[in-house]
Length: 158
Ligand SMILES: [Cu+2]
Image (cartoon, rainbow, N blue to C red; front, side):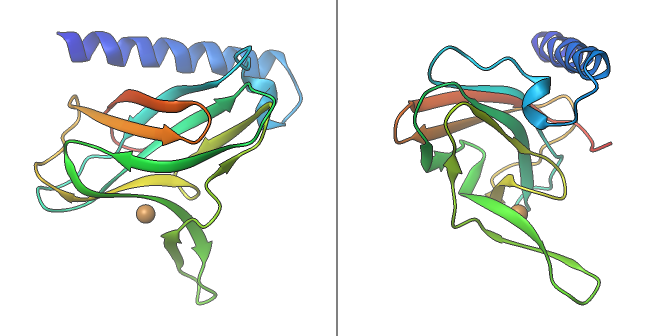
């Protein structure tokens, strides 16, 4: 029941963002979001399904409303043995690869979007299966904003 409510909330948020997007013709990612007055806010987080002992990824929009660049310095999740910030890159052979991001930076007064095919928080060594409707807790530690705990609903991409 609780997870249904959270999914509904996320759906409503996505819908509002979508409306905001169509109402505003500009295509810059920042136009879709209202930055917080200060600090870091995370919106529209969701996680891919994953198998026990397998992997998953969490996507979100990171809104840094402060006047300084913030840096992600640590992550953890109760469902994963290892958590990393990954970026997707073109391997040059027609395939896409992913690797740990060496630039976990979130510039002042801007939005960094983690989306399929791009930046994502990689969950590895899952200690249980993640199925649609489940929730994943993720603790992000920023150098400036400190510790932020989010709950991401599990859903299939697309
Ligand atoms: Cu990855």
